[in-house]
Amino acid sequence: MNGDPTRPLAQDDARIFALESDAVLGHTLKLLVLEPGAPLDVDAVRERILAGVDTFPRALDRVVVGPSGAAWQRVDRIDLDHHVRSRSAGTPHDLRRVVGELMSQHLDRARPLWTVDLIGPLDDGSHAVAVRLHHAMVDGIGGVRFLDAVLLDPHDVPPHPVGVSAAAPAIPRWLEWERMPGALMRELGRPGARSPFDRPITRERALAFADLPLDGLRAVGASRPQHATVNDVLLAVVAGGLRRWIGGLPQARGHALPHLRAQIPVSLHVEGEAAAAGNRDSFLNVDLLLREGDDLRRLDGISAQTRVRKLDHDAALMDDLFRALGRAGSVARAVADNPREFGVAISNVPGPRTPVVVSGRRVERLYTSSEPAAHHALRISAISSADRMGVGFCVDPTAVADVTGLADATHDAFDALAAT
Image (cartoon, rainbow, N blue to C red; front, side, top):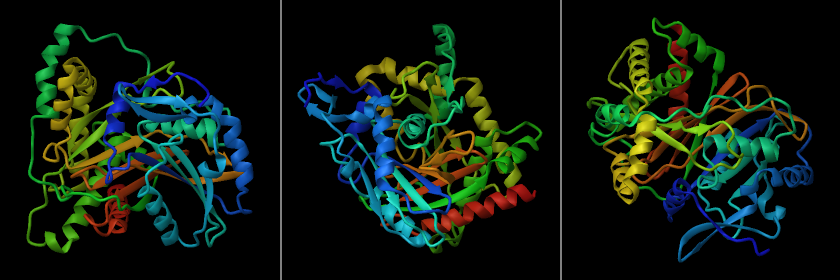
């Protein structure tokens, strides 16, 4: 090591790092599918990463654990032969298999917690790039910043402002505590029945992806009497996919659909933060209304829930509460993470606003995937890119089968909602 002092992980980063176990691997994945063309030059990709890695300092740090807890420590050099590799895949099935294998492998704690795998060439001449990043190193917004700084060809389009807000004045203490009971009842006070994903997990992972038109999501939201956001429409599409998929499972026949609540991460990043600002988010819990048979009524019901939670600043209030509780906040978080409080986590991260390029090749599709958690065997993640929304479904296949069926059902749900 070069003698740099260690720097303790921030509270949120340390909490996430501590969740890692044999079954919980702790990382996220960004999958970029490039237009057909000549094979990717691994040395050229390494040169681009080496040129940009200094602008994202966390990419130069590993995690060491000592008597005082986990801390960042700068490494002497980046071993690009380890961090940037090539893998073969020909068909979409091969690609899903490779990224499933990547998601089932721990990142090496002796090194900075990221890898880049060049996958292909696929049968149509395209290539894919799979970027793994430990969640203690970046959250969703941070992952996009990593791509910008380290992998994408330089461009002059600023990051998407959604998810990063101006620093807001503190909520007056009297108003905060006046609103707190309502926020607690909405977010933590409604334990439900056991969800179909409330199962122990292993380290095995299987992935599937859905690709949705961003303009189509916007058009559906704009058509409603009370305007629904893109994220509201995304939640309704995913809920419609879950309704179709769960209802078609053999074990569901003759049984009512479950009351399924989704936990929605909410970014609390503010303008002016460093690129490697770490994790800064809270959450909302929303009933996905799977028992509602009408797609538009389901969308309106979901939109009404998120509207109330945003107006009353539930996410910020929950973050303030956990921080105010100090060590007792870990108990409150354990309650919040109980599978009876929510059955599935669904995140949505704003990605590049215009087409972007890797090694001179345009990125045609961008997807993201996040880890399942103990007793939350399905995780759904979305990311926008130019005019598309890529949705990743990640499961432990020993607990949840046929994840590709869920991706197909999500496409069907979008088609049905758009058609109405």
